[in-house]
Image (cartoon, rainbow over all chains, first blue to last red; front, side):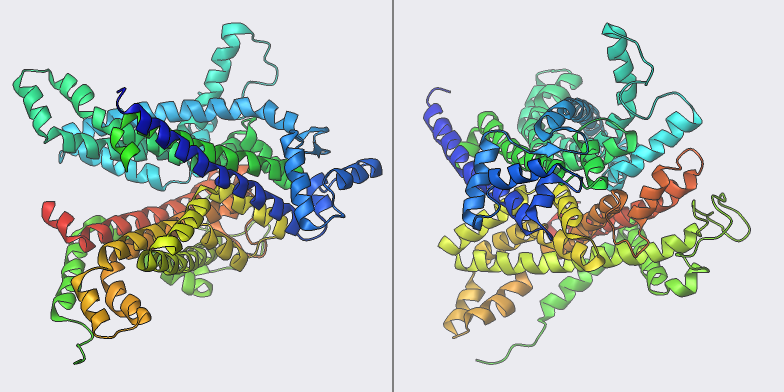
Length: 328
Length: 291
């Protein structure tokens, strides 16, 4: 390990340097959208809402809207550096606070959905690889194909119809019930119940991707010499599958989640809207319907930056797991 | 230099081999049949719809199996079947046009990067990387929300955000082919750059792109459905996404408003994915022999 470290550190340094122009790029894209939108950039910065004249003047001064474009960009970067994302008149709250308030719900939903996707996807993939070519394999593969093709929000609506409307087993709107007074463990349990359906809807696509990947790499590993060797030594079948063969699939699974963050968040926006889950995605939907532009563009900015960082972190994890990455 | 026949004997048999392999894949053939059925319905929409999908009636929220409305009606009394058939026009147009535009862009960029290499490659691929990190769906949402929707705008926006994958694939093909013996021979024979790219390399490099067309089409249709669900589809056209948007408010009263368009989207996307898999297996002889 110690002999590999300099290469690892050099790789990390290079990747971070390469990510900086991407970060600047996504900020500039956001800036250009605001500046080039039809009408006045002031409208985009304030939203299509009656705002006091004084605030309009303040925004014009802060962002230098009477200055030439390059100066405006510098002002925009300066405002962002101070954490100024504008004020949402539709919500009567600074945009930054609004986003921070909603961030937790989205992290909870996407985190649980991806954990679910990893567990179910890995189990299904290992199972399919174990019984390759048998009926089990066919069922897993067909389900994966369906899971990959169904729009998350339609799956969400189907789940609501079955489990909330017809069976009445699970709640489907929001994060807890309106009149809930539960606290402590009871409150956690309640949020958990509300979380089940949206998490399943969001996870399905990644269950499909992860099970396909796991099946392929485990199937490949099962034909390898080291698995043959392990079997010859009398290692139990379960250990062969989950320790020896599955290790091969670890790095690809990390990339499925890391490189797909933009799709995961897009899915989350749609699923949150279906389930009225009070996260960033639902906020995006509301800001679009209310023409609350500063919220909309701030969310785009946050998501863009998040995706660049997620790609960077994924590359770094890859380099740590798999030494070959550092030298390529 | 003597002119070569347009298709070499080996090429023709390779294509028919591929078609033979594709036909043996029952899933892929079923997918193709479903796609062709939707295409026929979309083209002949006025013939097959049976009623005007834009005109409501007094019979709102009729369940499927009603005498005049076999798939039921929506909250405004519009016939769901008619909406589906007209909605197919939007989904298929957006899917096909976006796939063609984005793949064409990707081929252009990938060819330039792969053929010239060096600094051109460096710059173009950084550009591709940049477009790849842009969050396609959220960015498309914001662009349409700020600049307005409309069918062709949607197509351009989705296509411009979708080309990098094709560019990467084409570039990789070029990198392995540009030094190949037959390309070198044509170059020494005096062929110009354009000829080398279009007549020598493309015919040998673009097979994997065929698969990408079906996958890009599937993802464009999903993006359009998502935009429609967010209420940002073309306001003048009925689309499957906008039907699901309307359905959200009536889930408890009228399940068919959600289920019908949802199944339509699922059937098209699923078909495109199995056709893509089928093409992939059929066009990749090495995989075929291994199976």
